[in-house]
Length: 282
Ligand SMILES: N[C@@H](CCC(=O)N[C@@H](CS)C(=O)NCC(=O)O)C(=O)O
Image (cartoon, rainbow, N blue to C red; front, side, top):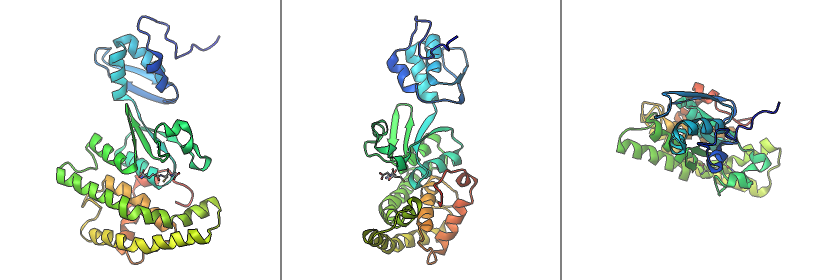
């Protein structure tokens, strides 16, 4: 006997449109999710071997509009991911927050980030990208801010606290990540077994020369603060840790920056970091 096709509703009275079901076809393979939906039975539980089944069940129960709202609210987020520093900010944060999220691997080595399927999520062809319901969000720091706003955890509650968090995320983007990207050419060359030519050596040197000024700011900040936002670990630390880590793993010495060294060790000692996927050598 052939398996019933889960994408074809047998009850055609309230059959979901193909347009509604289509986006769910490729996701939610092995997850049990619970959905509470107003107007349906108080709690509809389904094993979501595919999300289309859920869409069908809910549509039959409450009609397509409510089912759509319900699923959008209850759906798992998805993080398009590679085990490199920028996506690691997202996975580290998700582990710290204890949030469930489907990790969708994008293999940069195979060029999957340049395929139309991924470019539809981020025209710039970079990971991470977070998808939450109708929202598609590239840029690691925007993702951290979103997770902070969405959960109200590991993120400041006051306007000045939030501005301070953004200040440190912008500082990282603007003043640390560009030279970090340059020095990490050394790490990438080792990872992919490629020799460094003269131009690459010059780029690495430029990064090594630019980093100390920015790291000195972080070093001074850490004189008064255990974590980037003060006494409590937070999402801003989820951004700094993978970047400082790749700088160190690229052979840049932190000897001049003992507080940065201790801070990085403290970040890496967190259980959530141990669970954060990483490339060999990171
Ligand atoms: N500003 C972006 C940078 C993202 C980024 O450059 N990601 C790298 C992986 S760590 C990437 O996707 N590289 C692919 C490429 O450069 O083609 C962010 O913070 O998310």
